[in-house]
Picture 1 (tube, rainbow, N blue to C red):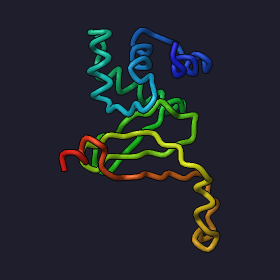
Picture 2 (picture 1 turned 60 degrees about the vertical axis):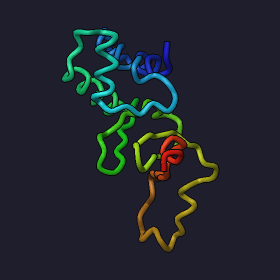
Picture 3 (picture 1 turned 90 degrees about the vertical axis):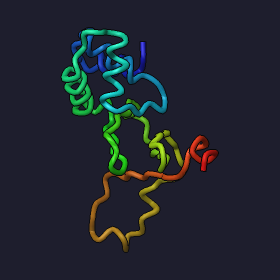
Amino acid sequence: MSDLLERLRGRGWRMTAQRRVVAEVLDGEHVHLTADEVHARAVAKLPEISRATVYNTLGEMVTLGEVLEVATDRRAKRYDPNAHRPHQHLVCARCGAIRDVHPTGNPLSALPDSERFGFTISDVEVTYRGLCPNCSASA
C-alpha cells in the first residue's frame, strides 16, 4: 500500500475503486502528472473511470492537503503526492519535466527583514529552472 493511500485512509476518506486507482497512479517519488496523464494511466487500470471522476478526485485530494497542485509557467497544472515533506521543484524550461529537490537551509532566512515589508511569512515556494539532461544533450 502506498504512502498516499495510507494517508487518505488515515483521514477516513472513503476508498472507492476509482479513488484507489487515482491514488495508485500518483504513487511514487518525483510524480508530477497532469490530470489528463492521471486519467490516461487510470483508464489503463480501470477502463470505466471517467475524466470528470479523475478531476473531482484530484480536487478532493488537493482540498484535503494530501496532494499539491503545481503550476509552472503556462503549462497544465500537475499533481504532486509529496505533500508532507517540504521540498522545492526543479523544472526543465524546454520539456517541462519536474523533479522534487530538497535544498539545505531555511529559504525563509534568505529573505532579509528589510525585504519583508511587514509581511508575516508563512510559506515559501522556490522553483529552480534549467534544462534536464535529455534537453541539454539535444541543445
